Image (cartoon, rainbow, N blue to C red; front, side, top):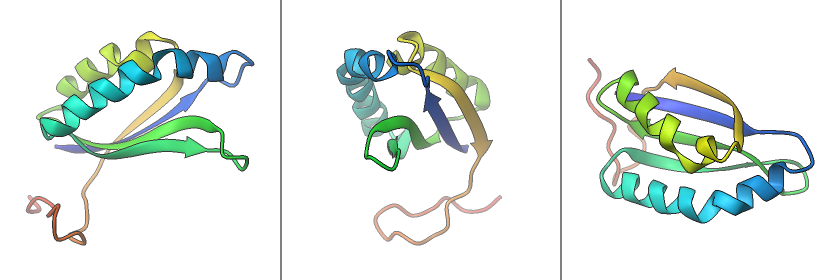
Length: 105
């Protein structure tokens, strides 16, 4: 099942430092999940100045429970980076020839 995850960092002065402190661990985990087929696409949400303030990720997990298991262990969660996380079921449109969308059910 595909989901759209939109996560915003804290807005306090220490938020950018917390993100940088665990960014390498987060990206290592994300690369592994992408290789395993769980992360379809993702990246940073930027403010008008180009500063990272959050993340948006399209993921594929067998259930919401499996997605929640990933989230609670992600370095951006355990490192207190993401303060607000929204998860929505998601269905990709069949636009990209190298990443076909799953058949609608």
